Length: 349
Image (cartoon, rainbow, N blue to C red):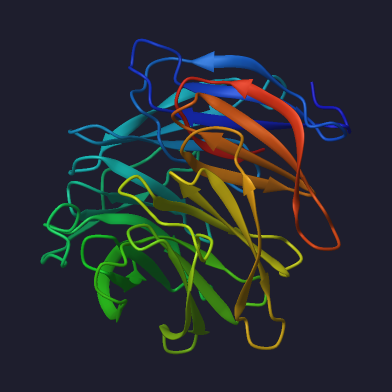
């Protein structure tokens, strides 16, 4: 099925359980053309996905009031998905899933539930019952978006001994120690009131961590203290152009770093763009270099494979492809798009 000029990717969407919601697609690396190969039903709103290192197991949250996390085996030949069952997340609107470094645990954050979970992984990739749950308390300064805790992402730190949780409602990044399947609070890192931290990107060097802050449209740069499990703020930088007047629809969404470590990208909903920052190789500080239209409305998640970026435009129902200029990091539209209903997450195989 796989060819040297093709790469496969999965797409998660906002779709009802009775409709196809998870899609297997293919990308032509030369020209950026995309095709849908297969759709999978049986899960509602699989809004975030994670693949194990071998690409044999896919995990998908089901973002609904009674949240769930599902596991799927990926067929070695056809790459078709077979359900391995799921577990309740004990909270509403799970919106992020990640995998421990040893791939023996799955982490989930529940946006409206205000809690984060740990699930042990069986040898076949299926999930055991929840081994740990932590519920956040408090609120932020924005009554419309921060009336309660809203954990938006949970990822292992570079040491593998801790996980970091971005809580949009509390303006905090919370470190938890991970021991024997249990989470215990380690440290809280405070961001400016009304920031709304959403996702994190770890620099390949391990020196710096970057957070995309949804509510005030900024990226925060941190030095990464791996030994003590701490982040120290170096910089806040806007994701929107200097003279652009942001409206209520303008919210930042996703953040990724190129494999070379020279470029950082973030998505702007409302402005409907991907911003390019250059990363100073000695300080980790960012400089805004360019804004490229996403080719659709409300670019949510995006993903990078070699010199190609795919952007999931949720509201326009399209995935657009771009070539990344190796010299300056700028995005060059390929002119190709793939129609997918409400795409919100892309994961390359």
